[in-house]
Length: 99
View 1 (tube, rainbow, N blue to C red):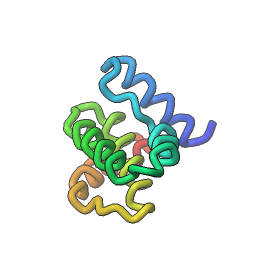
View 2: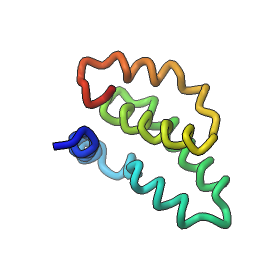
View 3: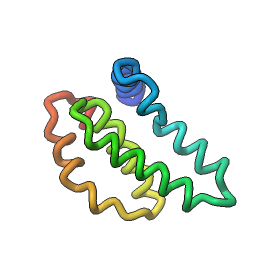
View 4: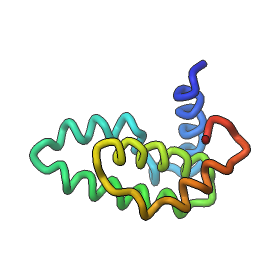
């Protein structure tokens, strides 16, 4: 079992508890960016808005998934400095898969 598959399982369980509110995984964002080549900036802005909503949740699994997506967006060159506190919050979790 890899760390990413464990994270996916935790996020899946968290999603089931919250319904369809948070339905974009990192895989969905990567696929969406590829599918929105003509209007990538607008798609990324929508994703960031959704990530901001995820970071406001109390569930640490949802926050960890949001940080995972933010890390990918940062690798693409987008500014995520506004989320530094949320990243520290997730990194301080006792669960290794969230770190």
